[in-house]
Length: 574
Image (cartoon, rainbow, N blue to C red; front, side, top):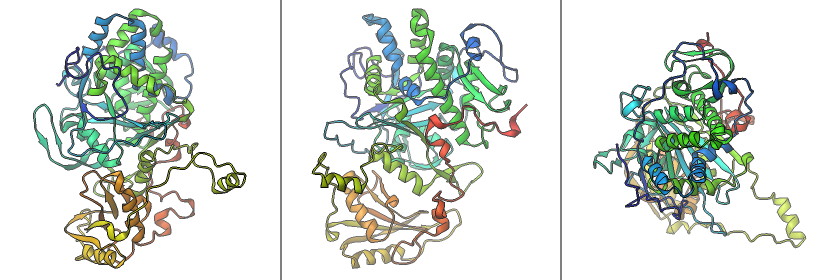
């Protein structure tokens, strides 16, 4: 268990309210000091308990559609605001709450992404990784914390707030996504975890949340400024502190693995039953991680909704209990290690309109090596999503540039409008250094790499004026061809290389570990001088859906458009 000293000395002290919360440079945490687990309000296998109190009162009213505005405010520190408002000048109580918060290094990897460049008004985007841990420390083991394979981050959401704070994008990822976890070093023990290919939730066990942050940066090319993490005990204590969280299922549900048992319709889950909801996988949707992710989204949204409207906020005793639960539940990076920092972050995000908060699950495909159990990122669709975030473009596209004809009309009327920021231009081909690597092998089928493939493409680049092209003698297995670049300064050159060889824009990806612009010739380009045109089947035909295997449907894009009730797997009803 690691804990930063935040009582006035060293990092994370109580006087850090002036800290710049948007620059995203620093360290990360683990889980908090466990509290005694709350008694479950209902035992596994029983029907929901009845009784008085706030939870029972809520069962009788219909819950409106969840709003990500609430979860945003909660996760970004609205609790800290409420605590400050109640505690006022009670310095020692604030220091006590600061002592509850665990903190750790922000990034445990060897690479760091460049922070976003401020816009004309000096504003920068803000990216926060929200994590749920299955830590088995303390009381978490009794609540179902993982007992094998190390601590895991079973809930992962990336929250991107635009530079002007006009919109927010939330990206969730299934916990069973297979991904490359970069080399990470535990700052406390010095243990080095080598690079590995594993489920993304295993990254938490490679030294702490900082390795999960490093994994997300490597996977997305998006620089992450902060993280916030809850463990199992935190989920239980928070649910109890607000008197229960409303959820809804479209049929009676009973999941023997998570022990969740609820009747159809609206329910209020508390204590361990709240944890059962968050752990349920097989009983939701088709039994995969996408269903569980949507259930978690519903829970978090409605919990934040309850926090905003709870009577606890006007009751000093209940408010203090809520503050204790919240601060004990949190593990954050060192730049958020005080109530004051959390308050500042909450204020920073408070102006985001509720109707401009968009949620989407990362596009994925069944894992070729284990399609029934694990998934992999859809190489084209996921990169297109990550590119939108990197370019600070909202999913609802309300801030898109005017159409070309509108721009022409504006020019004809003499309305110059705002001056456009000139786009970065590529260097001449002869000045661009490109390393070409052979990735045509296929580990899933055992297909060997095409001999001399990297050399052939290097020769093509040389013939097309890229006299700085050279061949990497090594080889790897890469399903899709990509052009990697290490920093934003190289993006225009990487895009020029892709265009010269016929590769689509989605093939251009940032990779902090790349030594320079690197063209990896994948298994999808085993012959020919130019990258092959996609077939109608690969592009989804006229519908443009991306094919039948595309795992994300329109319902996942805007959280406010999701159904009120979770869909129950017919094999898990009673």
